[in-house]
Length: 250
Image (cartoon, rainbow, N blue to C red):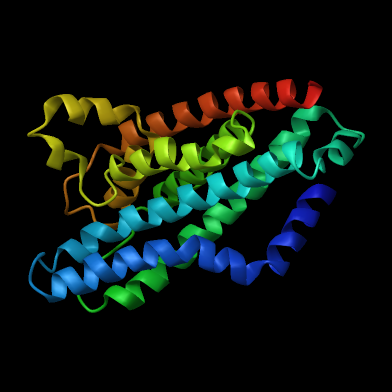
């Protein structure tokens, strides 16, 4: 709890930087695709509602990965600040779990803030509704957990000289093949690709939020989304904890 409070204090002090880092890119996508392209007649007005869940998913995933991976890379390789944390009178695993919880909270805040921001940019014409609030809450928590656990796994597996590679080879393909700007059913003309993208957890984040906010559009079944997100959460957490312990001991 003390380390979590410390991370919250750092986040508050860097609030402006975090805001620009988290929301600038998604809002630019919203403005270009939702306002410029739709307003010019190149895309149908209904695309605004289709786009919003994907933007929320991107914001949450990018925020959670960045909030966990980048500090870990710095603390293990630059500042060596992790050494102080490893001296805390708790098991090493709890230090990693605290990182995950801090990343989860930041991802949840990002997701909840981007909804009204994107709505302001896209209005009028956005039609969203939350039919089952409990399922919606469960999905955003699972998405936030996946992003933070993914950040833990990446942060403990990538060296500082490979940060650019992480964004070029992992984050960018994840976004463009994560069904963020289109529904999964849009890939039906590319059957091999449609099946291949199912290994991308962002697909289930986008499709799950689409099912909750704009159910009139095609989407994966909610049960499939929940099971897939739970699987990726557990898998990435196990991998991340193992990598963290290996890195800490070395």
